[in-house]
Image 1 (cartoon, rainbow, N blue to C red):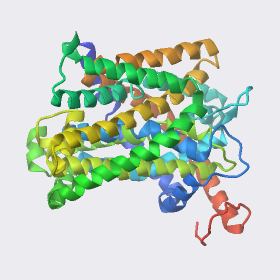
Image 2 (image 1 turned 60 degrees about the horizontal axis):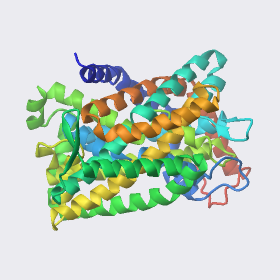
Image 3 (image 1 turned 60 degrees about the vertical axis):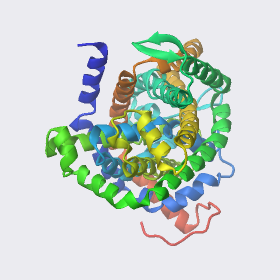
Image 4 (image 1 turned 90 degrees about the horizontal axis):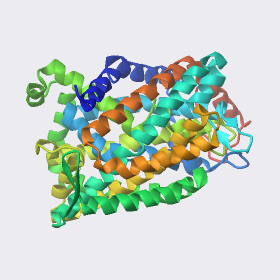
Length: 485
């Protein structure tokens, strides 16, 4: 068994039935214990996201914390991850991605609440928080080892998986695809049996240099950049996807049938390919939930690291802001990507990775295919670059906790992160994605245990906040409606 095959086998083991059930059960538990407040209050949560709290302490604004979290979550998972989920689990994977995301809104909310409640102010005045601190402070010092374990897996995920290789691989391959279509195919060298063109090399150098220029400024610089990039890139992608959607609206009914029938293994065509209805059903759930978590990171434990740095006095308010990330990331953007892929038939062309979504955009417009390729390549470059920035912050905070704030080790880790960005485009795509999934799964276990153990704390904070808001004890400056708990 090769290294790649072993990683793939281990990834399948970690992302097995136990993980799928655990993620969904924790999301359901948190939804029920909070009486579905996170889902029911999405409108107010979105208002909180763009209205910063006055007089609050923290490293960045609530909006800056949200855009940093969105920068990390809105990435290749929304473009490449959705396509790979559909290619691996059939169109039905999209249904399970959305199903998990609905309950993931409560999961992301709980992570934000706990991150702010148990955050730690360091000696230099900076704030550090996330699963490692709500494990240590919320569950008790005897569980610190679990927090250390989370920090270790988070550090590895950032430098060797979701934060670097998958993102830069997606950017460079998309740019290379456009260049190949335009006739630029000159080879620089061969790596892992595949030719690396000069376009890939130059694109990698530019991305690596851009990464260095931003991350040396820390969370403040990252937040400043993401506050500008994230809203712009999301608008560009949503408008482009809507155009593909409307130009292919005649195939919407057929696409929805494929999604809903495939979700339960009832799509005869895909069931035959998967080895039966039961196998198709399992694959749809596994790929849908796994790629959904890769995209929105609900339950993964990454977003609360940014949430902890937010300028806020109310942990529930920041939890509400955090919950909008799952809604925007998966229920809005991933849904658009998935429908565009299925409506245009891109999943039936025998392609893989980014080429699936590029085919959907290239053939989804009534214009030359190059127009769609360029639009998607631009969106992917912005999405993935912002994810590289956001995950650098996550990974460094994890490494900070793991090494007890050793500045020399943190500095060395930062350069390891940069090196991973530089070599990412030249690694085998399948191994890169399997390793990223594996690290995500290993991160999720400690975090999900903590969310389960502290679900009562989340519920108590939730109801206390709403009582104070409705009584007027907490004033947020926004119009209030009488609401029942």
